[in-house]
Length: 475
Image (tube, rainbow, N blue to C red; front, top):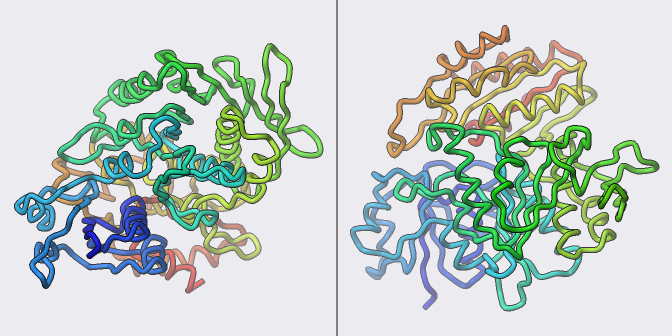
């Protein structure tokens, strides 16, 4: 009889990947959650994973009075969750998904970990695609759904030569406050950006930086760090590295240290990544890309630099970049007709939202830009107020919907949509709050019809209760 795994909070991107991974390993898989929305719900259904709505302690005992051999829970699940309480009472093996990744996915002697405040999912997916294009067996985990990869988690096996893990600085669980990325023991590390966020977990910027410093110090002397030379905090934390650091910069003029890699955007006939040493180009990598967003040039450069440094030839890098489709919910165009566009993006913190809106304003300067923003719980604590300064300066309209509730494990009182509206009004923006989804959609449709050039972008880690799908259908 096959082993049984039950996953509490299966609708997360990583936990859904864990579910599919164990099914492919031959386990019986069950999973529960309070809500299921695309693209994760679609992914689970396509993979034949049964979805159980809500949480019930009885799910940990089957018709034969058997219990799961393993219970995995998402770190944000409340400590009052009935299934979590039952698992502890029954003394069942209980693990978070980083612990599972360490056991089943990480290749200890060749572990690539991609981290940073933003860009890590795209860089991880590109790195995996480059390795696969090079016919190199790779295990991996990425915190998103990629059109290029059938799975978002692939277990290691005896043939695996590299593992590539997206390393999140978020806490492992309410019981284990250390960052998830500490579980993955990197021999090779990518750091794209270090901008203070999650103020509910890191009360000060220095506390946030300290977590990255500790990670950098764990990379062995014979390892490698590939780091963004234009990010002040990245350069600062990399001063503590014991290993070689290879720096990259999209704009060489903005580099704070001499970059080993940079973008030559004006090169003809194609833009090129340049590998330089002692002021002389050692390698030129011309490339074509199909993904949207100028900021993705930085992500592509990071993935190209890392893979080249570990021995991948430039032809395979070029081939992978040209056929790379990005990540769902990362500047994903959900509707486009003439000059009217609807975009779905994961930017659930003011730091991420700011970067996305700046990119859109650069690429579409004549468009009216309306942002529907739902912050994650960490961006709703009072300590996060300062992070909102100027975050929405490039939006013509900011809309706050009703916020998705959080579990009782979050001990701090969170700001409401009305609270955040008051904060960003200081930027002289037009701000609206809608606690009713239908009213929001109705007014958004009127707005969309009234402009010849308009972009509506939904920014948030949740799925907006199906509003995006309804909006696209109506327009």
